[in-house]
Structures are given as C-alpha cells and as structure tokens.
Length: 294
Image (cartoon, rainbow, N blue to C red; front, side):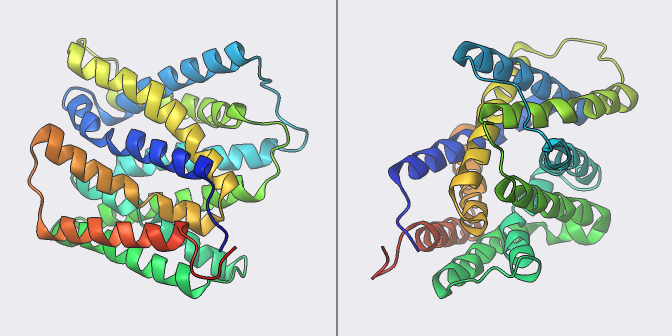
C-alpha cells in the first residue's frame, strides 16, 4: 500500500467534517420540511452553487463524447436512487436508524470489487474492512428492534448503501476526460427533475414558510455538503482505490455522533464509543502504509 498524500488526507478531513457535522442540521430542517421537499431544495441550491463556481473558474460544462450513459448511471446510483431509497426507508424507521444502514457501503464495495472485478484484498485492507464492519455493526445494534418491526425500512436502507457502492465503481472506473467539478454538477442536474416532481406529487406545495433556522440549515446543506461535499467525495474516489475511498466514509457517522453530542447534547453510549474506536483503527489501517510499504 502506498503512502496517502497530504492532499488526499486534507480532502478526507474536509469531507468528514462537512458531511459529518451536517447530520444534526438534517434534524433541524426535517422538523419543519417533508423529506423530498428538503431534498429538492438542497439540490436546487447545490446546482446554483456549482454553476456559480464553474462560471467563476471558467471551467467547461461539456460532457466528453460517449460518457452520457455512464454519467446518467452515476447520477442515478449516487444521487437519485440514494435520495429515493433513503426517503422510503425513513417512512418505516427513524431517520437516524436509516442513515446508519447507508454506511454499509464499504462492505458492498469490498464484495462487489472481489466478486465482480476480482480485486485482491491485502491482509491490511481486509482487516480494515472487518474492523470497519464492526464499527457499522456497533451503530446498528441499538436499532435492530426498529429493523425487525419494519423490514421494508431495513431493505431500503441497505439498498441505498448498495447503490452508493455501484455509483462509486462507476465514477472510479470511467475516464472522465476534462471533467472536474462539472462531474458533480451534471449528476445533481440529472437527478433534480424526478426529485422535484416527487416532492410536488407526494409532499405537495408548502402551505407556510419554514423558520429562519430551518431555512438556513437547508440552504447550508445544499451549498456546502450537497455541492462541495459531493464534489470532494468524487475527487477522493478518483484519487484512491475504491475500497479505501469507501472505507473513508466510515468516519462520517462518527463525526455525526460527536457533533450530535456537542451541538444537540445527545448521550454517548458505550456502543458508540466502540464504533468510534473501530473507525479510527480501520481508517489507520486503510490510509497509513504498513512497514516496508513505499
């Protein structure tokens, strides 16, 4: 395993901070907004933010010839299906319980990589995946009663993680010549119309304005975690092996737990402490070279 560059570590730290600290803001926004309406607004804000950055930097919006099928597939798995399946999951189980299921994604990446792409797992990376699985299991254990009562919620949450894994491989294994930030822009743009239509048909038009606090949380979520966080994630996927990039996402729910403790004064359980310790060890094994590595 090669040493991870400071640039990659900086991107990982930024993504973990931005996505992890955003979970408490979800709670604030979703107290006043339906799920699909919230998702539609964040995506509109995200598109506006990405458009402004692309224009300011003079980057091209062009999609390379022959890449539209892969781009549509990436958008469907990374953005559209993710938003729909997680929205379906929270119809059956609490949103916090549903979100944990999405972070089975590294396990799906390892399984797909091994079975479909015949990717070899080193002993160090296999250990990181097993310990990372322990972290996810520790987060899931308190929620098993919810999953047992509502198996549909369990299914849709796991399916979200599975689709995220497929989307990770699509982004990783496609040559996006000349596409930087526009890769994120087009994925969000492609997924916006069906999400917007779903919000109008299922949630209906809002009959009142949300509070300033909920509106601020929603706008921030669209501008920073949706736009810049998603762009950072795709950059990491292109820079790291798929399994290592996937494992890096394990840190996100850990930061979410810590930020919930600090911002919302939520309790910290022994299982959450096990998850935190397991995640730190898994990330160390995945990102730091072993003895004798270049």
